[in-house]
Amino acid sequence: MFHLKQSGPGSVSYYFHHEKKFLLIVTLSGILYNVGMIAGPWFDGQLAQYLYDIFGGTRTAADMYALCLGYALVIVGVQGSRYVKRLYVRKFANNISLAMKDRIYQHLVQTPKRDMEQADTGALMTKVISDIDTCVEGMRKFTTEIFDTGVVMMTYIVMLLCYDWRLTLCVLVFPPIAYALANSLRRLVATTAARSKESSGALSGMTLDRISNALTYRVYGEEAVQDRRYETYLADYEKKMILANLWENTLQPIYKVIAMIGTVLVIWFGGHNVQGTGWENWDIAAFSTYLACFIKLATKSSHAAKLFNAIQKAQVSWQRIQPHLQAAAELRQPVPPAAPAELTVRHLSFTYPGSHAPIFRDLSFSATPGTMIGVTGPVACGKSTLGQAFLCENPHGGQIFFGAKEFGNGHTAPDGIVGYCGHDAELFAATVEENIRLGLPGDIGTVLKMVCMDQDCATFPAGTQTPIGEGGQRLSGGQQARISLARTLFHPRPLLILDDPFAAVDMATEQMIFDNLRRLGSDRIILLLSHRLSLFPKLDQVIWLNGDGTAVVSTHEGLYASCPAYRDLYDLQHAQGGAIHE
Image (cartoon, rainbow, N blue to C red; front, side):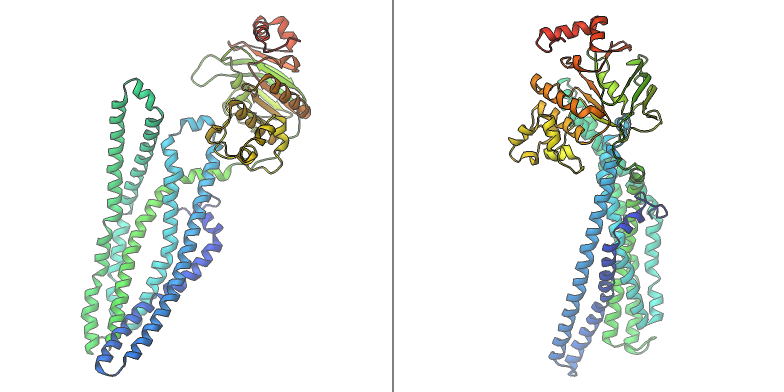
Protein backbone atom coordinates (compact mmCIF):
# COMPACT_ATOMS: atom_id res chain seq x y z
CA MET A 1 0.00 0.00 0.00
CA PHE A 2 1.07 3.64 0.02
CA HIS A 3 3.67 5.05 2.43
CA LEU A 4 1.66 6.15 5.45
CA LYS A 5 4.46 6.80 7.95
CA GLN A 6 5.57 10.09 6.45
CA SER A 7 3.93 13.40 7.23
CA GLY A 8 3.10 16.38 5.08
CA PRO A 9 2.02 16.52 1.42
CA GLY A 10 4.47 13.73 0.60
CA SER A 11 2.33 11.17 2.44
CA VAL A 12 -1.08 9.70 1.66
CA SER A 13 -2.24 10.14 5.26
CA TYR A 14 -1.86 13.92 4.85
CA TYR A 15 -4.63 14.03 2.26
CA PHE A 16 -6.92 11.71 4.21
CA HIS A 17 -6.44 13.89 7.29
CA HIS A 18 -7.26 17.11 5.45
CA GLU A 19 -10.50 15.63 4.15
CA LYS A 20 -11.59 14.21 7.53
CA LYS A 21 -14.94 16.04 7.48
CA PHE A 22 -15.94 14.43 4.21
CA LEU A 23 -14.57 11.10 5.44
CA LEU A 24 -16.77 11.31 8.54
CA ILE A 25 -19.85 11.73 6.36
CA VAL A 26 -18.64 8.88 4.15
CA THR A 27 -18.13 6.67 7.22
CA LEU A 28 -21.58 7.26 8.69
CA SER A 29 -23.45 6.91 5.40
CA GLY A 30 -21.25 3.96 4.36
CA ILE A 31 -21.96 2.00 7.54
CA LEU A 32 -25.69 2.69 7.25
CA TYR A 33 -25.74 1.67 3.59
CA ASN A 34 -23.63 -1.47 3.87
CA VAL A 35 -25.25 -2.78 7.04
CA GLY A 36 -28.57 -2.18 5.32
CA MET A 37 -27.39 -4.37 2.45
CA ILE A 38 -28.23 -7.51 4.42
CA ALA A 39 -31.88 -6.48 4.17
CA GLY A 40 -31.83 -7.49 0.50
CA PRO A 41 -31.08 -11.20 1.01
CA TRP A 42 -33.42 -11.32 4.01
CA PHE A 43 -36.33 -9.83 2.06
CA ASP A 44 -35.52 -12.10 -0.92
CA GLY A 45 -35.84 -15.11 1.34
CA GLN A 46 -39.04 -13.82 2.93
CA LEU A 47 -40.60 -13.17 -0.48
CA ALA A 48 -39.88 -16.76 -1.51
CA GLN A 49 -41.36 -18.03 1.75
CA TYR A 50 -44.47 -15.81 1.47
CA LEU A 51 -45.05 -17.01 -2.09
CA TYR A 52 -44.81 -20.62 -0.90
CA ASP A 53 -47.18 -19.89 1.97
CA ILE A 54 -49.68 -18.16 -0.35
CA PHE A 55 -49.80 -21.27 -2.52
CA GLY A 56 -50.18 -23.33 0.68
CA GLY A 57 -53.06 -21.14 1.86
CA THR A 58 -51.42 -19.95 5.07
CA ARG A 59 -50.87 -16.36 3.83
CA THR A 60 -52.76 -13.93 1.64
CA ALA A 61 -51.78 -11.52 -1.09
CA ALA A 62 -52.20 -8.66 1.39
CA ASP A 63 -49.34 -10.09 3.45
CA MET A 64 -47.17 -10.08 0.32
CA TYR A 65 -48.13 -6.46 -0.45
CA ALA A 66 -47.18 -5.37 3.07
CA LEU A 67 -43.85 -7.16 2.79
CA CYS A 68 -43.16 -5.54 -0.60
CA LEU A 69 -44.00 -2.10 0.81
CA GLY A 70 -41.58 -2.63 3.69
CA TYR A 71 -38.95 -3.83 1.19
CA ALA A 72 -39.42 -0.71 -0.93
CA LEU A 73 -39.08 1.62 2.06
CA VAL A 74 -35.89 -0.10 3.19
CA ILE A 75 -34.48 0.14 -0.33
CA VAL A 76 -35.21 3.88 -0.41
CA GLY A 77 -33.37 4.37 2.89
CA VAL A 78 -30.42 2.20 1.92
CA GLN A 79 -30.03 3.76 -1.54
CA GLY A 80 -30.31 7.24 -0.03
CA SER A 81 -27.35 6.41 2.21
CA ARG A 82 -25.53 5.06 -0.84
CA TYR A 83 -26.11 8.32 -2.72
CA VAL A 84 -24.71 10.38 0.16
CA LYS A 85 -21.68 8.11 0.49
CA ARG A 86 -20.85 8.19 -3.21
CA LEU A 87 -21.38 11.97 -3.43
CA TYR A 88 -18.93 12.68 -0.63
CA VAL A 89 -16.42 10.07 -1.79
CA ARG A 90 -16.36 11.86 -5.14
CA LYS A 91 -15.95 15.23 -3.42
CA PHE A 92 -13.17 13.72 -1.32
CA ALA A 93 -11.39 12.46 -4.45
CA ASN A 94 -11.86 15.74 -6.34
CA ASN A 95 -10.39 17.77 -3.48
CA ILE A 96 -7.37 15.49 -3.26
CA SER A 97 -6.84 15.67 -7.02
CA LEU A 98 -6.95 19.48 -6.96
CA ALA A 99 -4.61 19.62 -3.95
CA MET A 100 -2.04 17.30 -5.55
CA LYS A 101 -2.10 19.07 -8.91
CA ASP A 102 -1.79 22.46 -7.23
CA ARG A 103 1.22 21.34 -5.19
CA ILE A 104 2.99 19.79 -8.16
CA TYR A 105 2.26 22.92 -10.20
CA GLN A 106 3.75 25.07 -7.44
CA HIS A 107 6.79 22.81 -7.40
CA LEU A 108 7.26 22.91 -11.16
CA VAL A 109 6.96 26.70 -11.47
CA GLN A 110 9.57 27.12 -8.73
CA THR A 111 11.93 24.52 -10.17
CA PRO A 112 15.14 26.10 -11.53
CA LYS A 113 15.03 26.63 -15.26
CA ARG A 114 18.10 24.48 -15.86
CA ASP A 115 16.37 21.51 -14.20
CA MET A 116 13.19 22.05 -16.21
CA GLU A 117 15.16 22.14 -19.45
CA GLN A 118 16.64 18.74 -18.63
CA ALA A 119 13.24 17.23 -17.81
CA ASP A 120 11.21 15.10 -20.21
CA THR A 121 8.18 17.22 -21.09
CA GLY A 122 6.06 14.18 -21.89
CA ALA A 123 6.93 12.53 -18.59
CA LEU A 124 6.03 15.72 -16.70
CA MET A 125 2.65 15.86 -18.43
CA THR A 126 2.02 12.25 -17.47
CA LYS A 127 2.94 12.93 -13.85
CA VAL A 128 0.72 15.96 -13.55
CA ILE A 129 -2.32 14.50 -15.27
CA SER A 130 -2.30 10.74 -15.61
CA ASP A 131 -0.36 9.74 -12.51
CA ILE A 132 -2.34 11.97 -10.17
CA ASP A 133 -5.62 10.75 -11.64
CA THR A 134 -4.55 7.12 -11.25
CA CYS A 135 -3.33 7.69 -7.71
CA VAL A 136 -6.49 9.52 -6.65
CA GLU A 137 -8.64 6.85 -8.26
CA GLY A 138 -6.83 4.22 -6.18
CA MET A 139 -7.44 6.26 -3.02
CA ARG A 140 -11.10 6.68 -3.96
CA LYS A 141 -11.55 2.96 -4.59
CA PHE A 142 -9.76 2.13 -1.37
CA THR A 143 -12.04 4.46 0.57
CA THR A 144 -15.14 3.14 -1.17
CA GLU A 145 -14.26 -0.53 -0.81
CA ILE A 146 -13.58 -0.22 2.92
CA PHE A 147 -17.36 0.01 3.20
CA ASP A 148 -18.70 -1.52 -0.01
CA THR A 149 -16.46 -4.56 0.41
CA GLY A 150 -14.99 -4.64 3.92
CA VAL A 151 -18.00 -3.63 6.02
CA VAL A 152 -20.59 -5.38 3.89
CA MET A 153 -18.55 -8.59 3.74
CA MET A 154 -18.27 -8.66 7.52
CA THR A 155 -22.02 -8.09 7.70
CA TYR A 156 -22.68 -10.95 5.27
CA ILE A 157 -20.32 -13.27 7.16
CA VAL A 158 -22.05 -12.55 10.48
CA MET A 159 -25.40 -13.22 8.86
CA LEU A 160 -24.19 -16.50 7.32
CA LEU A 161 -22.75 -17.64 10.67
CA CYS A 162 -26.09 -17.00 12.33
CA TYR A 163 -27.84 -19.28 9.86
CA ASP A 164 -25.31 -22.18 9.83
CA TRP A 165 -21.83 -21.68 11.24
CA ARG A 166 -20.52 -25.08 10.04
CA LEU A 167 -21.56 -24.53 6.44
CA THR A 168 -20.23 -20.98 6.59
CA LEU A 169 -16.77 -22.17 7.64
CA CYS A 170 -16.75 -24.54 4.67
CA VAL A 171 -17.82 -22.03 2.02
CA LEU A 172 -15.51 -19.28 3.31
CA VAL A 173 -12.46 -21.30 2.24
CA PHE A 174 -12.75 -20.14 -1.38
CA PRO A 175 -12.75 -16.28 -1.23
CA PRO A 176 -9.29 -16.21 0.43
CA ILE A 177 -7.98 -18.30 -2.47
CA ALA A 178 -9.09 -15.54 -4.85
CA TYR A 179 -7.34 -13.01 -2.59
CA ALA A 180 -4.14 -15.06 -2.56
CA LEU A 181 -4.14 -15.31 -6.35
CA ALA A 182 -4.62 -11.54 -6.72
CA ASN A 183 -1.86 -10.89 -4.19
CA SER A 184 0.55 -13.23 -5.96
CA LEU A 185 0.03 -11.35 -9.21
CA ARG A 186 0.35 -7.83 -7.77
CA ARG A 187 4.02 -7.47 -8.72
CA LEU A 188 3.23 -8.42 -12.31
CA VAL A 189 0.32 -5.95 -12.36
CA ALA A 190 2.53 -3.20 -10.93
CA THR A 191 5.35 -3.89 -13.39
CA THR A 192 3.13 -3.82 -16.46
CA ALA A 193 1.41 -0.66 -15.18
CA ALA A 194 4.78 1.06 -14.67
CA ARG A 195 5.90 0.16 -18.18
CA SER A 196 2.68 1.49 -19.67
CA LYS A 197 3.16 4.78 -17.76
CA GLU A 198 6.71 5.15 -19.06
CA SER A 199 5.54 4.46 -22.60
CA SER A 200 2.69 6.95 -22.20
CA GLY A 201 5.16 9.66 -21.13
CA ALA A 202 7.45 8.92 -24.07
CA LEU A 203 4.50 9.06 -26.48
CA SER A 204 3.36 12.41 -25.02
CA GLY A 205 6.84 13.85 -25.50
CA MET A 206 6.98 12.54 -29.06
CA THR A 207 3.55 14.01 -29.79
CA LEU A 208 4.64 17.45 -28.57
CA ASP A 209 7.81 17.25 -30.64
CA ARG A 210 5.88 16.21 -33.75
CA ILE A 211 3.44 19.12 -33.38
CA SER A 212 5.97 21.77 -32.34
CA ASN A 213 8.44 21.00 -35.11
CA ALA A 214 5.99 20.03 -37.85
CA LEU A 215 7.00 22.90 -40.11
CA THR A 216 10.71 22.17 -39.76
CA TYR A 217 10.23 18.49 -40.54
CA ARG A 218 8.13 19.37 -43.58
CA VAL A 219 10.61 21.93 -44.93
CA TYR A 220 13.56 19.55 -44.63
CA GLY A 221 11.70 16.50 -45.88
CA GLU A 222 11.80 14.66 -42.56
CA GLU A 223 8.07 14.05 -42.22
CA ALA A 224 8.22 10.42 -43.31
CA VAL A 225 11.08 9.66 -40.93
CA GLN A 226 9.29 11.33 -38.01
CA ASP A 227 6.05 9.56 -38.88
CA ARG A 228 7.83 6.21 -38.69
CA ARG A 229 9.36 7.19 -35.33
CA TYR A 230 5.93 8.20 -34.07
CA GLU A 231 4.41 4.90 -35.22
CA THR A 232 7.13 3.08 -33.28
CA TYR A 233 6.30 4.97 -30.10
CA LEU A 234 2.58 4.46 -30.67
CA ALA A 235 2.98 0.71 -31.26
CA ASP A 236 5.05 0.39 -28.08
CA TYR A 237 2.39 2.30 -26.12
CA GLU A 238 -0.43 0.16 -27.50
CA LYS A 239 1.42 -3.06 -26.73
CA LYS A 240 2.27 -2.11 -23.15
CA MET A 241 -1.15 -0.61 -22.43
CA ILE A 242 -2.94 -3.73 -23.71
CA LEU A 243 -0.69 -5.91 -21.57
CA ALA A 244 -1.34 -3.76 -18.50
CA ASN A 245 -5.11 -3.86 -19.04
CA LEU A 246 -4.93 -7.61 -19.69
CA TRP A 247 -3.41 -8.40 -16.32
CA GLU A 248 -5.62 -5.92 -14.54
CA ASN A 249 -9.01 -6.85 -16.00
CA THR A 250 -9.03 -10.33 -17.54
CA LEU A 251 -8.34 -12.09 -14.24
CA GLN A 252 -11.53 -10.68 -12.74
CA PRO A 253 -13.75 -13.57 -14.00
CA ILE A 254 -11.26 -16.08 -12.60
CA TYR A 255 -11.43 -14.48 -9.15
CA LYS A 256 -15.22 -14.62 -9.30
CA VAL A 257 -15.34 -18.28 -10.39
CA ILE A 258 -13.03 -19.29 -7.53
CA ALA A 259 -15.09 -17.36 -4.97
CA MET A 260 -18.35 -18.84 -6.33
CA ILE A 261 -17.27 -22.47 -5.94
CA GLY A 262 -18.83 -22.43 -2.49
CA THR A 263 -22.26 -22.15 -4.15
CA VAL A 264 -22.11 -25.91 -4.80
CA LEU A 265 -21.73 -26.57 -1.06
CA VAL A 266 -24.54 -24.16 -0.23
CA ILE A 267 -26.93 -25.98 -2.56
CA TRP A 268 -25.88 -29.42 -1.33
CA PHE A 269 -25.74 -28.87 2.42
CA GLY A 270 -28.46 -26.19 2.37
CA GLY A 271 -30.79 -28.68 0.68
CA HIS A 272 -30.19 -31.14 3.51
CA ASN A 273 -30.98 -28.40 6.03
CA VAL A 274 -34.34 -27.74 4.31
CA GLN A 275 -35.08 -31.49 4.35
CA GLY A 276 -34.25 -31.64 8.05
CA THR A 277 -31.24 -33.93 7.58
CA GLY A 278 -28.47 -31.32 7.77
CA TRP A 279 -26.69 -29.36 10.46
CA GLU A 280 -29.60 -26.90 10.85
CA ASN A 281 -33.34 -26.92 10.23
CA TRP A 282 -34.19 -24.41 7.51
CA ASP A 283 -37.31 -23.32 5.75
CA ILE A 284 -37.35 -21.99 2.19
CA ALA A 285 -36.83 -18.42 3.45
CA ALA A 286 -33.65 -19.42 5.29
CA PHE A 287 -32.28 -21.30 2.28
CA SER A 288 -33.03 -18.45 -0.14
CA THR A 289 -31.59 -15.86 2.22
CA TYR A 290 -28.40 -17.87 2.78
CA LEU A 291 -27.85 -18.54 -0.93
CA ALA A 292 -28.48 -14.90 -1.91
CA CYS A 293 -26.22 -13.69 0.87
CA PHE A 294 -23.38 -16.02 -0.14
CA ILE A 295 -23.61 -15.03 -3.82
CA LYS A 296 -23.33 -11.39 -2.84
CA LEU A 297 -20.39 -12.22 -0.58
CA ALA A 298 -18.61 -14.12 -3.35
CA THR A 299 -19.19 -11.26 -5.79
CA LYS A 300 -17.78 -8.79 -3.31
CA SER A 301 -14.79 -11.05 -2.81
CA SER A 302 -13.94 -10.88 -6.50
CA HIS A 303 -14.31 -7.08 -6.36
CA ALA A 304 -11.87 -6.97 -3.47
CA ALA A 305 -9.36 -8.94 -5.52
CA LYS A 306 -9.76 -6.42 -8.33
CA LEU A 307 -9.21 -3.65 -5.80
CA PHE A 308 -5.75 -5.05 -5.09
CA ASN A 309 -4.84 -4.53 -8.73
CA ALA A 310 -6.16 -0.95 -8.70
CA ILE A 311 -4.11 -0.18 -5.60
CA GLN A 312 -1.01 -1.62 -7.24
CA LYS A 313 -1.47 0.72 -10.22
CA ALA A 314 -2.02 3.63 -7.85
CA GLN A 315 1.15 2.73 -5.98
CA VAL A 316 3.15 2.91 -9.21
CA SER A 317 1.78 6.40 -9.87
CA TRP A 318 2.34 7.44 -6.27
CA GLN A 319 6.01 6.50 -6.44
CA ARG A 320 6.38 8.75 -9.50
CA ILE A 321 4.65 11.83 -8.05
CA GLN A 322 5.58 11.46 -4.38
CA PRO A 323 9.04 13.09 -4.77
CA HIS A 324 7.41 16.12 -6.42
CA LEU A 325 4.77 16.38 -3.67
CA GLN A 326 7.45 16.07 -1.00
CA ALA A 327 9.59 18.70 -2.71
CA ALA A 328 6.57 21.00 -2.94
CA ALA A 329 6.08 20.66 0.82
CA GLU A 330 9.67 21.76 1.39
CA LEU A 331 9.36 24.94 -0.68
CA ARG A 332 9.63 28.07 1.33
CA GLN A 333 6.51 30.14 1.72
CA PRO A 334 6.46 33.59 0.10
CA VAL A 335 8.28 36.14 2.22
CA PRO A 336 7.65 39.88 2.48
CA PRO A 337 9.99 42.31 0.72
CA ALA A 338 13.40 42.66 2.29
CA ALA A 339 14.48 45.98 3.73
CA PRO A 340 16.50 48.32 1.47
CA ALA A 341 20.23 47.71 1.62
CA GLU A 342 23.44 48.29 -0.32
CA LEU A 343 24.17 46.03 -3.31
CA THR A 344 27.79 44.92 -3.64
CA VAL A 345 29.05 42.86 -6.58
CA ARG A 346 32.61 41.56 -6.36
CA HIS A 347 34.48 39.98 -9.28
CA LEU A 348 31.30 38.55 -10.78
CA SER A 349 31.75 36.14 -13.69
CA PHE A 350 29.58 33.72 -15.59
CA THR A 351 30.24 30.97 -18.12
CA TYR A 352 27.57 28.74 -19.60
CA PRO A 353 27.99 25.02 -18.81
CA GLY A 354 30.07 23.33 -21.50
CA SER A 355 31.57 26.62 -22.72
CA HIS A 356 35.05 27.95 -22.08
CA ALA A 357 34.41 31.57 -23.02
CA PRO A 358 32.99 33.66 -20.14
CA ILE A 359 30.03 35.93 -20.91
CA PHE A 360 31.51 38.42 -18.46
CA ARG A 361 34.25 38.24 -15.85
CA ASP A 362 35.71 40.22 -12.96
CA LEU A 363 32.74 42.59 -12.85
CA SER A 364 32.57 44.69 -9.68
CA PHE A 365 30.28 47.56 -8.71
CA SER A 366 28.11 48.73 -5.82
CA ALA A 367 24.87 50.66 -5.43
CA THR A 368 22.88 52.22 -2.61
CA PRO A 369 19.06 52.51 -2.41
CA GLY A 370 17.78 55.07 -4.91
CA THR A 371 20.44 54.20 -7.51
CA MET A 372 19.53 53.43 -11.11
CA ILE A 373 22.15 51.56 -13.15
CA GLY A 374 22.04 51.08 -16.91
CA VAL A 375 23.47 47.94 -18.51
CA THR A 376 24.13 47.92 -22.26
CA GLY A 377 26.53 46.78 -24.94
CA PRO A 378 26.66 45.26 -28.41
CA VAL A 379 24.14 42.65 -29.54
CA ALA A 380 24.53 39.37 -27.59
CA CYS A 381 26.95 40.95 -25.14
CA GLY A 382 25.29 39.27 -22.12
CA LYS A 383 22.89 41.94 -20.76
CA SER A 384 20.10 39.44 -20.03
CA THR A 385 22.59 36.92 -18.67
CA LEU A 386 23.89 39.50 -16.19
CA GLY A 387 20.35 40.31 -15.07
CA GLN A 388 19.54 36.62 -14.58
CA ALA A 389 22.69 36.16 -12.51
CA PHE A 390 20.86 37.97 -9.69
CA LEU A 391 18.13 35.29 -9.79
CA CYS A 392 20.74 32.67 -8.84
CA GLU A 393 19.40 30.00 -11.16
CA ASN A 394 22.89 29.14 -12.42
CA PRO A 395 26.21 29.05 -10.57
CA HIS A 396 28.45 32.07 -11.04
CA GLY A 397 31.89 33.19 -10.03
CA GLY A 398 32.53 36.01 -7.59
CA GLN A 399 30.12 37.26 -4.94
CA ILE A 400 26.81 39.13 -4.78
CA PHE A 401 25.90 40.79 -1.48
CA PHE A 402 22.71 42.57 -0.57
CA GLY A 403 23.52 44.16 2.72
CA ALA A 404 25.12 41.41 4.78
CA LYS A 405 23.39 38.63 2.82
CA GLU A 406 25.27 36.78 0.14
CA PHE A 407 23.13 34.95 -2.36
CA GLY A 408 23.83 32.51 -5.13
CA ASN A 409 26.04 29.39 -5.26
CA GLY A 410 24.40 27.78 -2.25
CA HIS A 411 24.07 30.93 -0.17
CA THR A 412 20.90 32.83 0.69
CA ALA A 413 18.33 32.70 -2.14
CA PRO A 414 17.03 36.09 -3.34
CA ASP A 415 13.61 35.62 -1.73
CA GLY A 416 12.05 38.97 -1.00
CA ILE A 417 15.05 40.79 -2.51
CA VAL A 418 14.91 40.62 -6.30
CA GLY A 419 12.08 41.68 -8.59
CA TYR A 420 12.53 40.66 -12.21
CA CYS A 421 10.90 41.84 -15.42
CA GLY A 422 12.27 39.72 -18.23
CA HIS A 423 12.69 40.52 -21.89
CA ASP A 424 9.72 38.25 -22.64
CA ALA A 425 6.48 39.33 -20.94
CA GLU A 426 5.51 35.74 -19.93
CA LEU A 427 1.79 36.48 -19.61
CA PHE A 428 -0.79 33.74 -19.22
CA ALA A 429 -4.37 33.19 -20.35
CA ALA A 430 -6.23 35.17 -17.69
CA THR A 431 -7.40 38.72 -17.09
CA VAL A 432 -5.20 41.80 -16.92
CA GLU A 433 -5.74 41.98 -13.17
CA GLU A 434 -4.89 38.31 -12.59
CA ASN A 435 -1.68 38.65 -14.60
CA ILE A 436 -0.59 41.55 -12.40
CA ARG A 437 -1.90 40.43 -9.04
CA LEU A 438 -0.80 36.76 -9.02
CA GLY A 439 -2.82 36.24 -5.85
CA LEU A 440 -1.46 39.28 -3.99
CA PRO A 441 -4.25 41.54 -2.63
CA GLY A 442 -4.22 45.28 -3.21
CA ASP A 443 -5.14 47.98 -5.70
CA ILE A 444 -3.48 47.54 -9.10
CA GLY A 445 -4.56 51.01 -10.26
CA THR A 446 -1.39 52.65 -8.98
CA VAL A 447 1.01 50.42 -10.92
CA LEU A 448 -1.15 50.68 -14.05
CA LYS A 449 -0.76 54.46 -13.92
CA MET A 450 2.98 54.14 -13.32
CA VAL A 451 3.42 52.13 -16.53
CA CYS A 452 0.94 54.31 -18.49
CA MET A 453 -1.43 51.37 -18.94
CA ASP A 454 -4.48 52.76 -17.12
CA GLN A 455 -5.90 54.52 -20.17
CA ASP A 456 -5.42 51.44 -22.35
CA CYS A 457 -7.28 49.30 -19.81
CA ALA A 458 -10.15 51.80 -19.81
CA THR A 459 -10.72 51.01 -23.50
CA PHE A 460 -10.84 47.24 -22.97
CA PRO A 461 -14.32 45.59 -23.02
CA ALA A 462 -14.18 44.60 -19.35
CA GLY A 463 -11.41 46.88 -18.15
CA THR A 464 -8.84 45.08 -16.04
CA GLN A 465 -11.13 42.03 -16.02
CA THR A 466 -10.59 41.55 -19.76
CA PRO A 467 -8.97 38.18 -20.67
CA ILE A 468 -5.79 38.75 -22.67
CA GLY A 469 -5.29 35.28 -24.16
CA GLU A 470 -2.38 32.86 -23.96
CA GLY A 471 0.86 34.85 -23.81
CA GLY A 472 -1.13 38.10 -23.96
CA GLN A 473 -1.86 37.50 -27.65
CA ARG A 474 -4.79 39.94 -27.61
CA LEU A 475 -2.47 42.81 -26.67
CA SER A 476 0.12 44.76 -28.59
CA GLY A 477 3.79 44.24 -27.81
CA GLY A 478 3.95 47.51 -25.88
CA GLN A 479 0.90 46.59 -23.80
CA GLN A 480 2.38 43.19 -23.01
CA ALA A 481 5.64 44.79 -21.84
CA ARG A 482 3.84 47.33 -19.66
CA ILE A 483 1.63 44.72 -17.98
CA SER A 484 4.73 42.64 -17.25
CA LEU A 485 6.40 45.72 -15.75
CA ALA A 486 3.25 46.52 -13.74
CA ARG A 487 3.35 43.00 -12.30
CA THR A 488 6.96 43.50 -11.23
CA LEU A 489 6.16 46.81 -9.55
CA PHE A 490 3.02 45.43 -7.86
CA HIS A 491 5.19 42.87 -6.05
CA PRO A 492 7.64 45.28 -4.37
CA ARG A 493 11.28 44.28 -4.01
CA PRO A 494 14.28 46.43 -3.01
CA LEU A 495 16.30 45.29 -6.06
CA LEU A 496 14.63 45.45 -9.49
CA ILE A 497 16.08 43.91 -12.64
CA LEU A 498 14.31 45.35 -15.69
CA ASP A 499 15.32 43.75 -18.99
CA ASP A 500 14.41 46.01 -21.94
CA PRO A 501 11.10 47.20 -20.40
CA PHE A 502 10.79 50.04 -22.96
CA ALA A 503 11.66 48.09 -26.11
CA ALA A 504 8.09 48.18 -27.50
CA VAL A 505 6.91 51.62 -26.32
CA ASP A 506 7.28 55.03 -27.90
CA MET A 507 9.74 57.63 -26.63
CA ALA A 508 7.13 59.77 -24.87
CA THR A 509 5.73 56.78 -22.96
CA GLU A 510 9.25 55.66 -22.14
CA GLN A 511 10.02 59.03 -20.57
CA MET A 512 6.83 59.03 -18.47
CA ILE A 513 7.45 55.52 -17.17
CA PHE A 514 11.06 56.39 -16.39
CA ASP A 515 10.03 59.46 -14.38
CA ASN A 516 7.60 57.28 -12.41
CA LEU A 517 10.34 54.73 -11.75
CA ARG A 518 12.58 57.51 -10.49
CA ARG A 519 9.96 58.57 -7.96
CA LEU A 520 9.25 54.97 -6.98
CA GLY A 521 12.92 54.01 -6.73
CA SER A 522 13.96 56.34 -3.93
CA ASP A 523 14.44 53.31 -1.68
CA ARG A 524 15.20 50.77 -4.39
CA ILE A 525 18.10 49.80 -6.60
CA ILE A 526 17.11 49.44 -10.26
CA LEU A 527 19.20 47.76 -12.96
CA LEU A 528 17.93 48.83 -16.37
CA LEU A 529 19.10 46.47 -19.11
CA SER A 530 18.52 48.09 -22.48
CA HIS A 531 19.85 48.58 -25.99
CA ARG A 532 18.11 52.00 -26.16
CA LEU A 533 20.33 54.66 -24.66
CA SER A 534 18.00 57.67 -24.63
CA LEU A 535 17.64 57.53 -20.83
CA PHE A 536 21.21 56.62 -19.96
CA PRO A 537 22.38 60.22 -19.39
CA LYS A 538 19.89 60.34 -16.50
CA LEU A 539 21.17 57.16 -14.82
CA ASP A 540 23.54 57.11 -11.86
CA GLN A 541 25.85 54.44 -13.31
CA VAL A 542 26.30 52.65 -16.62
CA ILE A 543 27.80 49.19 -17.14
CA TRP A 544 29.14 48.62 -20.66
CA LEU A 545 29.62 44.95 -21.62
CA ASN A 546 32.15 44.68 -24.43
CA GLY A 547 31.00 41.26 -25.61
CA ASP A 548 34.41 39.65 -25.06
CA GLY A 549 33.88 39.05 -21.34
CA THR A 550 35.24 42.41 -20.19
CA ALA A 551 33.11 45.23 -18.81
CA VAL A 552 33.47 48.91 -17.91
CA VAL A 553 31.59 50.53 -15.02
CA SER A 554 31.28 54.32 -15.07
CA THR A 555 28.81 57.15 -15.59
CA HIS A 556 27.28 58.10 -18.92
CA GLU A 557 29.67 61.05 -19.22
CA GLY A 558 32.67 58.95 -18.28
CA LEU A 559 31.83 56.21 -20.79
CA TYR A 560 31.04 58.70 -23.53
CA ALA A 561 34.49 60.18 -23.09
CA SER A 562 36.49 56.98 -22.61
CA CYS A 563 34.67 54.19 -24.47
CA PRO A 564 34.54 54.63 -28.28
CA ALA A 565 32.08 51.75 -28.75
CA TYR A 566 29.61 53.28 -26.28
CA ARG A 567 30.08 56.73 -27.81
CA ASP A 568 29.50 55.42 -31.35
CA LEU A 569 26.34 53.56 -30.35
CA TYR A 570 24.97 56.54 -28.49
CA ASP A 571 25.74 58.94 -31.34
CA LEU A 572 24.15 56.57 -33.85
CA GLN A 573 20.92 56.44 -31.87
CA HIS A 574 21.04 60.20 -31.38
CA ALA A 575 21.40 60.72 -35.13
CA GLN A 576 18.39 58.48 -35.71
CA GLY A 577 16.32 60.52 -33.26
CA GLY A 578 16.52 57.95 -30.49
CA ALA A 579 18.21 60.21 -27.95
CA ILE A 580 19.34 63.75 -27.16
CA HIS A 581 22.87 63.90 -25.82
CA GLU A 582 23.25 65.64 -22.51
